[in-house]
Image (cartoon, rainbow, N blue to C red):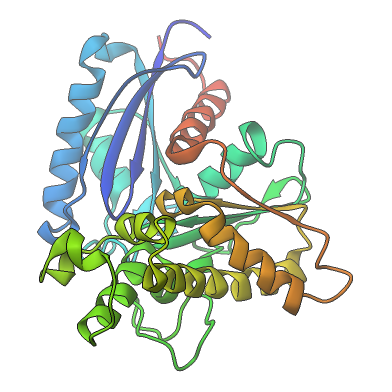
Length: 326
């Protein structure tokens, strides 16, 4: 492929991330800033346009051939519309593909971020060589992607595999999407922080209080993870509860898809065995005998770059199938 460049974008509940890659798929520049979803989609899209220009400023923009976007879902990839992502509560029916194509006069592809991450792990990471895998990202929200028979599972109209909205406890807490007891409401980063802060507000003791004083709303999942590593009993129990909720969801997924590997990604996966240990325990206790030893449960080996890397590859594949622009 002649010298060209691709813009890859990852839109999550916490960060907007933009990377520039060359025609071989190598990342050569990147930038990021807070999503600030509370300010609405118009603000977010305008800041995203600025971030794109900033990231591509090191090359001749005329040589940029396309923009690939991995976004929190649900999305409509055929129309390029971000629908109703709970982690972006003000972004509703945002026609991002059309907005970016109008601005930059380039082809734009919009895909589900966890789908892209699942493909990334399948091609480059912990699921390399596996034709059947499940990827779950545990971050601001919980999303997922499923590879079955070597192919990405897709829905009939919108992005499928909204694994964070499996019901794991009908009497559980309300989810941002309006449902009750969804996995995202019980094991995401904000859910972990909320569980800890509620228990402390009821008078339970934890070293987390020394991190934030009386401002319990300042507690973050990474603080809970650190406190758990330091042996804090409350933090350990909160992490165990989150891992157990994930475990119940994963047992159902194992029974449905019979994967070779279940990969946990996202920022909360940095908790490692604090999260994976309870997951494996639930699988050992709850999975049917023929399934319980079939799937490895591991952390992502690509980290936060999985969606970006495959967005680049996805765009390059699309460009190869298009007539060259003179």
